[in-house]
Image (tube, rainbow, N blue to C red; front, side):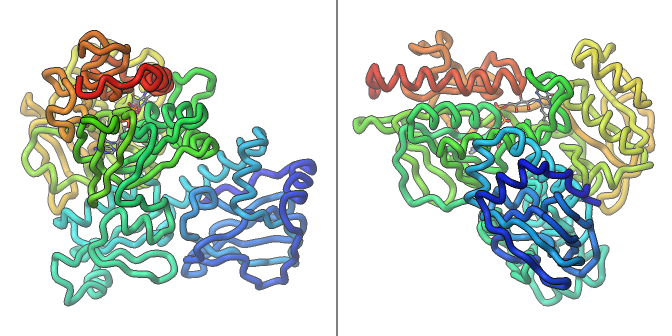
Length: 529
Ligand SMILES: Cc1cc2nc3c(=O)[nH]c(=O)nc-3n(C[C@H](O)[C@H](O)[C@H](O)COP(=O)(O)OP(=O)(O)OC[C@H]3O[C@@H](n4cnc5c(N)ncnc54)[C@H](O)[C@@H]3O)c2cc1C
């Protein structure tokens, strides 16, 4: 159940009133409904409003000094819920563009709204029947891809597998496998076998790129490194475009709580950190484009512009390029892993997974901080968690504070363990066999096994090390610390050979790269060097 809104102060209501319009509504009036393309921010002066789902089930109520809205108010997504007036209402309506301007100027109000919107989105993710409905079998790769994509974008979704849900089977009766999944969107729009881009556009998220775009700086990858570069690049006058294949925020966006980011002594949720970064990048007019996967890089050959080619035939001609594509999770080398992925084996522990795992036996595999965070989060949600890792002592790979937290929340830690086989039926895990031969009963498995750099798409365009990480600075015979073997092409964050795989390091490198971009542009590129 989403939290009722915290109260706006009298002065905040006055600020909103100055920017918006005071209106009234009668009992039974609908302020906005599921499927609407947009809605204003609503602050309640007097009266009461109920938020209900598409079937009319009440989710939460808001009263005087409360406010309506969630993340889609900022992102411009289609509306997922309906707001109905319960008691005669006086309210202030502020249009989305005006609200965004205000959020850039008013820190305390921005903090309040942003953290409430994020908390509400997290809560909506756990409510069945909100947002997207994806209908397709677990055996369909296209279905899994859409489910995974929606989850990484924090889109509330209900996945109905026709193999387990006869009503869902009826909905797709007569459709061939190539037409799946059927995706039903708020407002009764239905799409057959859509691409992630089609789903996002149908939800009203993100602008489409032209066939060819020309910019000063193209940033490939919107994790902390890419977003930091976007903020610094755009705020320092560079025409900056960020292209992202999956979800703005990168790996950091999937972190439950980042405890070691400077300036947040109580820790900060990954989504909140990255939502703030996206808002900040937009404030400075950096453009973000998603989902657009970079497929190749052609270094400049005469016109001073490097070309990044994207899926869908788009090309970006940029004076400089920042490669910030990070790294991707390693998979477990066991048979039939794909049968379990998305059903009982996961690579991130978000609210929907935590809800499914409550009171179940859960294994978290990995010895790094991300594994520790997930184990603590799941244990706090009521799961019986065992952390399995390969080394003799967890302290070799995990921060001390997390080792203490594991103990505090009753997570069992098993050293020197490797998972050798999975057992179960229809994707539902029942047990795993360890390399030692021991069988451990587990219903869910979360894998945090480290990562491989997302650089295959680059081929030989820039020099990489034997593991695929991008060489920079002296290792690449480059003029600048973060420059690659191609002048004018830079790399920052986890994708860079020798980088510290942490958020703060990625942010530092992303912002530092912009300084080198300026230097390179001033010096003139050594084209073709
Ligand atoms: C669960 C978890 C918890 C973590 N907890 C912490 C923590 O507590 N503290 C901490 O400091 N660090 C933590 N980390 C590590 C931290 O998140 C990373 O170091 C950081 O996100 C790296 O940032 P980045 O921008 O370099 O790359 P990423 O965050 O990996 O972002 C790269 C982006 O590039 C995109 N991309 C990849 N290929 C392409 C392509 N071809 N075209 C377009 N886009 C592409 C990806 O989709 C991704 O969004 C955690 C990581 C995980 C997974």
